[in-house]
Each structure stands twice: as structure tokens, then as C-alpha cells.
Length: 167
Image: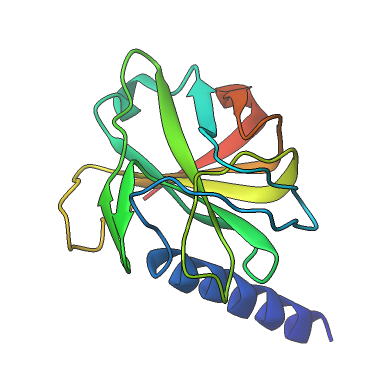
């Protein structure tokens, strides 16, 4: 039973990642859906800022492939997306990175900026040395935060609030 539960968790994670690549749009937008982990209002400029990052990650690009329930609303982090591709990601500098957030829901035709309030669990921020449109970004490492609470779509967290795994 334990292995079956792990398998279901892995399948869910793969689905979230896959849907996040197919979800982003570069425009703003309105969304009045609600999520089990967030509630969204129209418009939004949501960002996740991470402070105190490791010095060797300065200059790396950071993105979030998806966190939350894609059927009710999941966040994706990138500067710009188009269809299934992350077009550009923000670059870490000066010991911090600020990642714009988008809200993706299966069955919706747009992906507006996130503006909700709520908590997302198991948020994974990936770091890459390249930012090439149309290519799968190589994963230099990942920073996993157990829980992030957003207010008006944004949150600032210290590096010490998560765990980093380098590749």
C-alpha cells in the first residue's frame, strides 16, 4: 500500500509538471475561480521572492513548474510563457530572486497572473544555467519549500525555509 501511495504521488507530480508546461500565457487576465489552496480575484501581480539564496545560484534562472491542484488552480512561476514553453525565467542576483506567478486551471483557456490568498504545499523552485526559448531547461538544482502562504498573490521567504538539492 505504501508503494502504491508513492506511485500515485509521483504520477500527480508528473501531471502537474506536464500541465504547467502547457499552461502559461504571457498576458494578464482575470480569473474568478477558487482553489482549495487559494482564492483568486481579478487581475494580479503575484510573485514569489526568495531571499538569502546561495551565492553560487546568482546568475541562474529560476522557475516553478507547478504547485497546487491543476483542477482547482495551480501556480506556475516564470516571466513569460507561451503554450507549452517557458519562454523566459527570472535571473537570481544579489542573493535573491523574484518569480512572477501565474494561475493554471485545467479546462480554462487562459492563464492569468496569480493574485490569491492561501497556502501551497511542496513548492519546487528549479534553477537552470540557461534560459533558451523552446528548450527544456536543464535542472541545475531544486529548492523545495514545504509550505508557502500568499497574500494578494505574493510571498517573500528566506532561503532557510526550504531545502536545496543540487544536481
